[in-house]
Length: 189
Image (cartoon, rainbow, N blue to C red; front, side):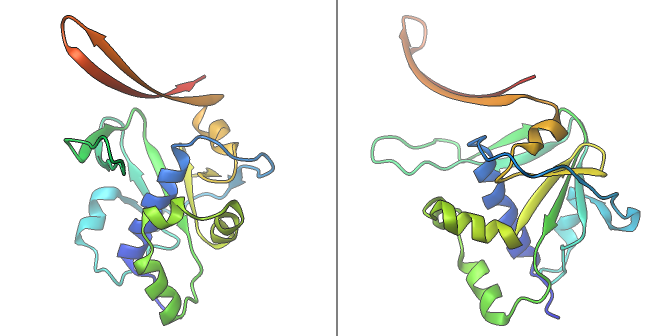
């Protein structure tokens, strides 16, 4: 059995979270009830010291309320770009994340995962994404017991306690700031 590369797990986590920003999905999956094993629950800061060959599959990583996690921003556009490519996201409550991946990946499959970037994911068809997430999934929980997949389902709304989400982008002009843009993401309870 091959170990799952920590860098691959973190990259997959980023791709899956990027899919969540769309805040869409199909109904049909249920909340997974699976209490986390205490010995496999770690604070996200502990990942910094891990060997890249460490297997993250089966571990639960948490972020405490008030802690910040860096969020990388990117925009592929001929007419605009971000001045800052990273901002800090502040957790408003303790959150747990669990990654599901096959444990018996071949060397070739691991190599393909290491070469996969978020841009590749956005170009996948719905069928390709569905096939990918059959084997790879990021789950979220508020209690490390009730888990919801962050892609392909709306059940994460139930686990996180909101009805739906909104993304809006606007450009405004005024005498105080001149031209300014606004990007907002919000949840509706």
